[in-house]
Length: 203
Image 1 (cartoon, rainbow, N blue to C red):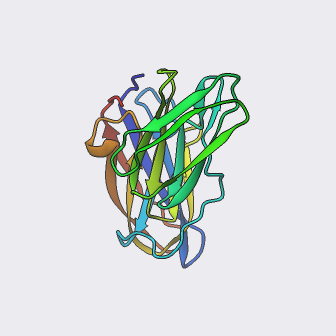
Image 2: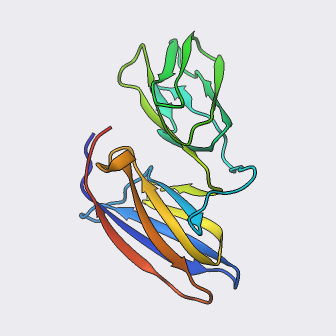
């Protein structure tokens, strides 16, 4: 799969004197949205201290001979489940440094779990079905979101002050498929927009 160069537009809108919302729109030069881009934000450039918990399930299902969701965000140390919802068996694995695992053949309505401890990316595949590809972004910040079908990711409740935003997508040609942008969350109704063109790439 190839995608066109991506236009990254970040807008910070403050919701109160002490918290801001970050809206990121990821689009190609043709104006079409790009989904499954992961945005991570680090207030003062630092990872989150203490436990991190997201609202979505830490789960990658096997359905219709593909991984669902294609991209999942989890905090470091999370246990991720891999339920098989297909009629055929799957053999799920990852060779990614720090998050290598292998879940040998298991069938329909069975599930396996693995704990991912290393910050980074676990690229996952199936040893039986080569067309199955998915990605788990393991993060060390509580401020993370994935772009939806409209290419938009929203992160709520950022503390006031400087932040570092990172944008990752499995098909970006960049070190670790990631670009970094320094932003500032300003009090009041301030808006800050930055545009970055990212080169296409592969996985």
